[in-house]
Image (cartoon, rainbow, N blue to C red; front, side):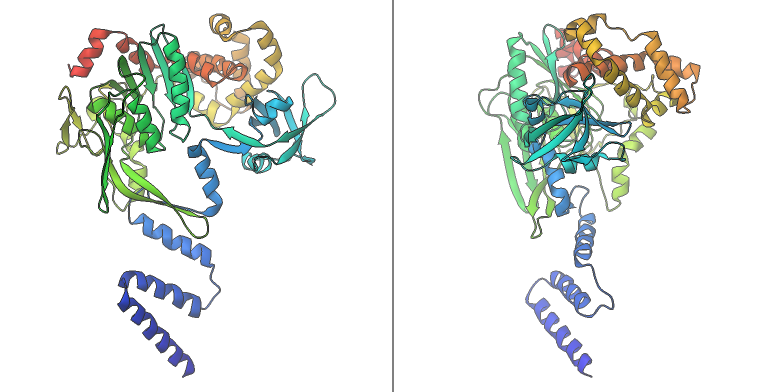
Length: 527
């Protein structure tokens, strides 16, 4: 009877609280309290609360997410544009931690660690031949600025292990993968993400290109999943004359906010091409939408992802975070490019795969536009569409001509990467002595037949089927990738793109168009 009285009293108390506030919210509080007071077994409160939060968010939209406290730091590092650590790019080869590159002016480079070094111990703890994983390396090498770590290193040509005492520091995460003059008149900049540092990085590279008599610019946003809206707007502002609406945001509880271009853009004159594909999302679509709506440049590639929702970040009591959608963003013509979603989020996440199955990535006629969401560009009155990403002005299909089962297996089983890492490791000094500059390497180096045959032999050892017809289809592409891989490890990722871009169809289409004034103008006029 006592227990019955307690339950009745508690129920009356909870009902009374519910009557004083939001009934639905108080119901949640009531259930929570009842579970923790009367449930038969011990409850993991943290796991239960997370499950409740995640379940609520699933009923909202695809981009409102809960981030547990232990994942917040790694999630934020990419957007913040830096982390704290020793400053090395690494690869695990044959169960050994190998330095691919010591970041220039980073802590490791300053003490003398260099490409090709093998880290065999961290703070006296052996890390060689123990099955170490990438996550383990991150935990051991990253840490707060000012803290130290002792690295034991093996270097080719030196018999005894070398000891390095490294003081951790802030390490930049670059968001500009490549920036160079792709022709004497045209510059090329590839942006991989929009982080806090992206605009500053972009301006540094743009100013360098301007010194090379830049007349036209290609901005590559393929594969760029977005990031900070401010970074995207600042970059778009460099191209659009002052006083123009670049974007506005609005939500049910968020009043409309306009973002206009300011004075003093560094490239307000001159031809522009923006490259996009099905993985270009959010901030990439802000840049593309503003450029397209003002007829400021030509968009080339394939229809972008279609993410037009704005998330606001809220820190919770246990240092976890909630990224909650608070508004939609709209391009200058007034279109929302957010693609359709409902409670079946799995269908939303598989939508890109559906495009491939339906032929959209290879045939522009397979793009299904919303006829009820037609808009006009603001200068030339060209037709553009809302409700499903940015549709390019010029479509370039996905090039699958060189992809075979053989090539897929070569990559997916790790054979190609292991083989090339071993080749670089054994031949780095020879190659560096023979090719003093990238320009010399690019013009003279050819992947020898013997090297390609060694790769095939390695593939055969790994039980990959060496189908001669498939090898013939993929061979030229693989050889190009091998040359680019070597350039990447001798110089930087910038040189990798200088080689790869020579055979990328969408880039060659962009170069041809941007240097053809008549064709470029016709594309902007919708002809």
